[in-house]
Image (cartoon, rainbow, N blue to C red; front, top):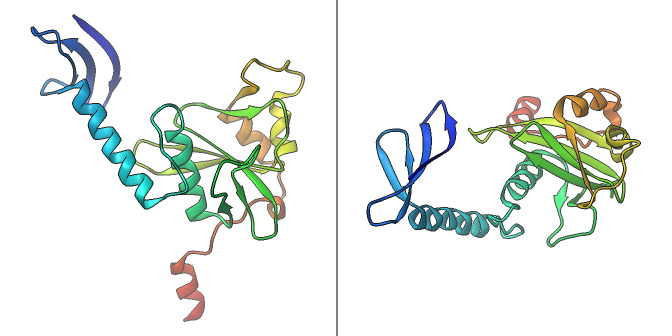
Length: 192
C-alpha cells in the first residue's frame, strides 16, 4: 500500500506505506525509510528537550506545538513576558501591563477569536527554517476588523488570511505596537 502524504522540494515525495510485514513506514524521498513508532519517539524526544529548555510551554504534538514555538520566538524578540500557565484570552503581558494574544501559523491564515476581542494581538508566520515574519502587531480591535459581520463558529475561532492581516496591520500606529527588544548588538553600537 502506498499513500502520498505531501511533497517538499527539500526532501522530495513523502510517502506512507506498509512493509511486507505490515509495519507502517514513512519514506522521505527515495532513500530513507522510517517506521511510524520511530518517528513518534524522535518527535517526543524533541518535545521533551524543548520543554526542559522552555518549561512554561508543553509543546504537545496534538495541535499546540506550532503555537508554543511561536510564543517562545515572540517572547525572545518582543518586550513581553509569557504567562506561566494558560490564561483565558491572552498569552503574555508587556512591561506596561498590556495583555497580548499571540497566534502562530505555518500556513496562509491565522485564527482570531469570535467570542472576545484580545487587548493586543500579535500574529506571526513561522517558516520551515525556524525564521518567522510578523504578520500583525497591534490592537485586537483593529485585527478584529478582519472578521466583522461573520457569525460565530462552533470553535469560536475565525480564520483570517495573512494578506488581510498584513493590510490591517498598516492601520496600527507605531506607538500602539508591542515593541521589539533592543538587541545586544544594537546596545553595543550605542555604547561605543
